[in-house]
Length: 258
Ligand code: NAD
Image (cartoon, rainbow, N blue to C red; front, side):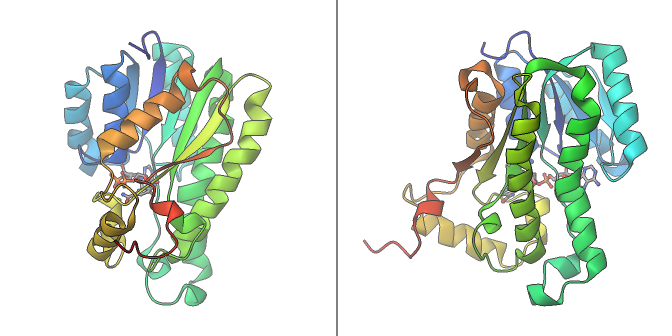
């Protein structure tokens, strides 16, 4: 029961295929008291289902593009739970034209939306939640290899993930004097709702499976377990890190030759 006595907010559950669901489940299995959010009414019933399964008392609306919703969420959590011990940010979005064609041709508008939803939201949540975080809290976001390498079709989202990983380092310094840790998991490709927006995703899955040291794709359970470690006191000296959970794919620069 590594998470017993810990209360945490998980942002980014869309359904039980979401990486956020894998993380929430791993934490709930270790005794965490969870708070979930849903992006909009369309997703509310799916998130409620997950909440029922994981014994989550309350789910709250949150569209991270709306500052007033982030503030309202913080105030509601403070009223209903007091201070919390961890936050998971598993949110990303880019308009179609930021994920197709040449990266070079991305519009300013699509680029800005991708950065706001996928990067600034993590910074803003941390900023607004500072007052209700316990000392030694742990913050976690989700990244992808496209932050550091060219990945077909990932385009603007790769640039957003690079900014997100850099933000993790700066946030780790700003919050480190309170013992608050900030980390990212760079997960291998997993078939989720968000991933369906990436072109040739099936090809990417197959390529990763064949060319990662472990010769397999990762599951949301595996990402969940690594996340649970980063959210628990087991990782009390780990901050500002990008932790790869990708069957080792990031270490192979060329196809594996047997
Ligand atoms: P998902 O579709 O299950 O989750 C994405 C979540 O983002 C959804 O719950 C959606 O509601 C939420 N979201 C989008 N815009 C939002 C907004 N304006 N306000 C609030 N919430 C919003 O997909 P996922 O793959 O589990 O994605 C979770 C995270 O993992 C993302 O950051 C993604 O980039 C990252 N990631 C995914 C993969 C993969 O292959 N699936 C790999 C590495 C990293």
